[in-house]
Image 1: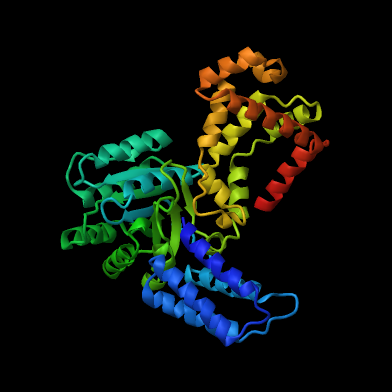
Image 2: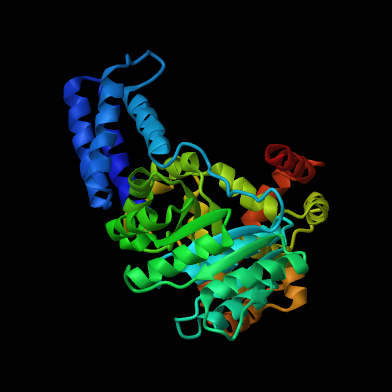
Length: 443
C-alpha cells in the first residue's frame, strides 16, 4: 500500500535536499508536487488543500538550523501533519463497564464486514478475551454459513437463529453471551450494494435495541473517494465510533486512509492487511505516516516478532550457533517463523528505505517457496550435513523440487556464507539478550 505515493514524495524530498535553505519559491514548488501526489492518490480535494496550506505556513515560519537540512525539515513537517490528518494518536475500542462489550459492525456489501468480524474476534481472543460472533446478516446468501465457517477456524462460537429477524437475533445474542460467559459480542449486520433506506433503518433499529458500546464502519480502501462518501452517508444516519479500512494490501492508492478521518471526524481504528484471519492491525497514525514517507515501521515489526517469539527455541538455536551446528533443518524452521509474520513484501515494507526500490522491483514469497522446496527435497541426513551433497544428489534434489541444479548450488553457497556470518554473532547470550531486549521494549 502507498508505494506510488511514497515514491512520488521521495522524489520531492530529493529535490529539496539539495537546497541550502527553505525559501517561498522552493517550498511552493515542492508543495505543488506534494499536492499533485496526494490528488493522484485519490485524497479528497478539500483535505489536500487544507493539508498543503498548513505545511506551507509551518515551513515558511521556521528557520533551518545548521544541524538540520531543508529536506529533513520539510519531511518532519509533512510527517507531523500526516499524523495529525490521520487522527494524531491510536484510538482504542470502548469497553463496557460490565460485560459483555457489544460491538456492531456495519458497511456496504462486499466491504469485508463478515471477514473483519472474524478477524476482530481472533484478535480479541489472542488478548485473552472471550468473543461471541453474531450472524445478523439474514439477506446475503450463505452469509450465516460463512460466519460459522470462519468461527470454526478460530474456535469462536457463532450465534445464529432460523428466524429472519436481525433485530431479534442481535437482542437474543446478548442474553446468550451473558449466560455463556462471553465478554464481547460482535454483531455482523447486513449490507447492501448501495445505501438504501431499508438497510439504514435496520441498522439504526439494531443500534437502538442493543445499545452497542462500539459501532465500527467497515469500508473497502480500494474504492477510494467512494469509500469516504459512503462513510459520510453512514455516519450522518448512524453516528458510528470508528472506521475499519479493509484490503489495504491490494492495489489501493491510499486516498481513503488519508481523507476519511477529516471528512467524517471519526478515527480509523483497524486496518486489514491480508486475507488471513490474523491479518488485522490496530491503526497507528504515526506508524502509518512513517510508512508513507519511507521511514519504515520498526515498532510494528518488533511487535510481530514478539508475538511469535519463543524464548526456549531461541536458547536452543543459540546453543547450536555456538557449537556451529546450525543446519538446513534449522534454516527451514526459521523460514517458517518469517512466514508467520505475514507476506514478505509487507514485512520488508516495515523496513526504512524500502520505498526507494525501483518501481519494477517485485518482492514476494516466491523466493522463500523455492528455498523451502529445495530443502524439503533433501533427506534428513543431507539437511544435517550438506557437505555430503555430491553431483548426483544435487541433481536428484533439483528434480524433486522442480528447480534447477544452479538454484540448488546457489542456495548451498548462500547457506555456507550465512553459517560463517552467524558464527560471528553467536557469542554466548546473544539470543537471550535479544529476547530480553524485545520484552523490555514491548512492556
